[in-house]
Length: 207
Image 1 (tube, helix red, strand yellow):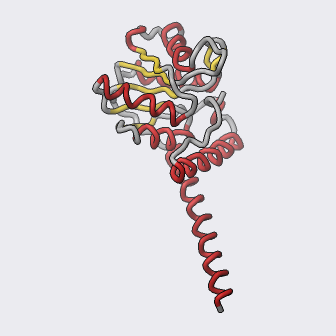
Image 2: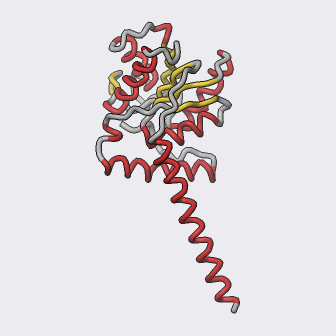
Image 3: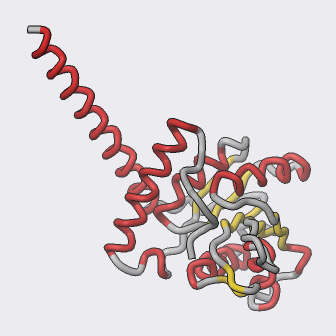
């Protein structure tokens, strides 16, 4: 009798865990398909890999989307965020600013590089004091579609009102397989953050 009770209890816990994971995965997928573009104090571009000051293909797609939003008047300022690996001359943030100024003709005064953060969480945490110091309240966040829910969650936890605007083209959404792998990764990272309050990422942003 007791043995059957434990089996049923174990089966119930397992089923609940599976349903919980599927619910998070569905949320990642659903939010990835949404866009809530609206005017904000700033546009935030989350960093990705850079090579000697040149943004990777993934990063360039994010920057181009942020540039389009800036040109459309959604915000007067673009904030690039992201640190660097040991030995790098440029940070992700400085490489992003360089691209926006040189390739996008954005005035230097309209781009703020927050040169800190080795993953999504530490980048989000670096933004909190900047917003507090400058009196900013809300932001339109640009990152890849499957990443948008976790990015919005972590940035919102810094007291920032967040809207999401993922680019709809580029390497991160190139194939169904790429999107599926990204959703699986983001589901795990979001669960890790929800349970342990940590990033679940081991290194710098994706390429």
